Amino acid sequence: MLTGLRGAVVIVRPTGELTMSTAPYFRTRLEQAAVFNTPPRVVVDTEEITFCDSAGLDVLTAVLHEIERGGGRLVLSGRNDRLLRILKTTGMDGRLQPYATTEDAVSHLAAFE
Image 1 (tube, rainbow, N blue to C red):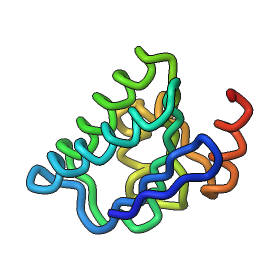
Image 2: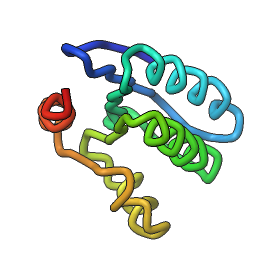
Image 3: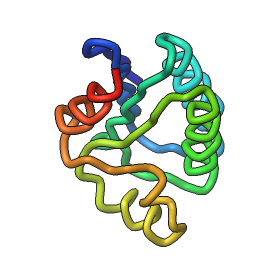
């Protein structure tokens, strides 16, 4: 899992499957990203996610709530149709805002600096 920084926005790029076995590591990485800046601004680039089960979605949802409680924002980027279908099915597509590109997501979050 790669992590990058653009200005005050942290970009997390998970790869492979977000499942029960990988969810703890994914959560740790997102929590680390969330404490890098105050308030936290995090983009999760979903481009390389090949599968996401309920454990992966639970991590995204839980960390989203933690970041929002801290006055921050977490959004998604990348064209990942499988993940978007899961988000739409669960109603989370409105809460975990998906942007087509990382640049679009970073630009959106940079407006909150």
